Length: 335
Ligand code: AMP
Ligand code: MG
Image 1 (cartoon, helix red, strand yellow):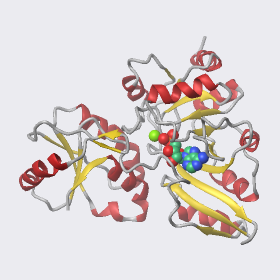
Image 2: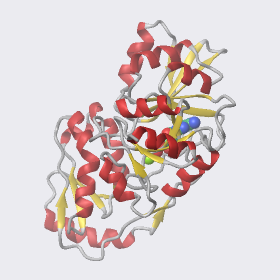
Image 3: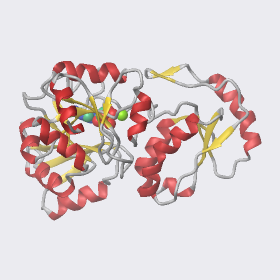
Image 4: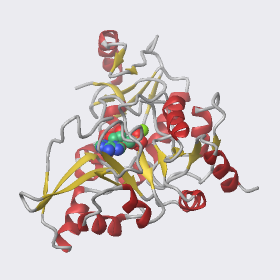
């Protein structure tokens, strides 16, 4: 039996499977198996208020998940799918409210990975999948990361090689306002698809739109201040800081950190001797591909702390998604 057949059987029985995608590896369950959906939250130790993204292999599957497949949704899906854009749309009755954390909307995406698409086609039903890591921790971009993360839970992982994008999808909510006669768009999470790329498609298709700048917490749950955290603390420092001076300041600051923020336990080093420098390529596409792997390497090293020197590139629009992940992964930012 090949791995896709085996995975299909496991999913059919209402269990979870590690699925490769181009963004990060997902922990997948069939949307029509409540036991499987529940087990995603259990295995990940994820709170129920954080909704899951539903992965499809065709536009027909996407249409069936929402009550409002508008021309805007069609245009964006055609432009970016399969790819790293999640569309948040009003949910249809096919979508169980455990998947959406009780929200009336559902996040939908078609992943750009041949094995993910093959799996969804073989199953015949969309798969709900969050990133395959314990809640609040670094997302996995290789099959062995998922094995490592769930070594006690005995999860079958389909090895699809290293993820080509390396960061989670852009999450975009979209709805047509009848009163204003235009689409209301909001980026709920930054990712590889930029706001400029989305705007370009809307303009080309003559679709009137407006971006909402600061979506409310209710609309974008799961956007915690701390997320993606490696096993040892990540500290962000200014590029010109002298490391020995940083150590003094750190001792003080670390003792002042709370134990937990928004349900994520902060990791506090017991000593501050060995520092591991996180370095990233200057090209944001390459940096995205490397970030989580390097955070894991740092976490597995003998170091007490990982530090990252804020290179000037980090402040450019091309680094928006990386900047978001780096700052959320950090336990401290030193000025
Ligand atoms: P992940 O942790 O990669 O599975 O991403 C799931 C994230 O997508 C959530 O934490 C939310 O930020 C976002 N998301 C998924 N579904 C919705 C939804 N219905 N409304 C708003 N945001 C959503
Ligand atoms: Mg995640």
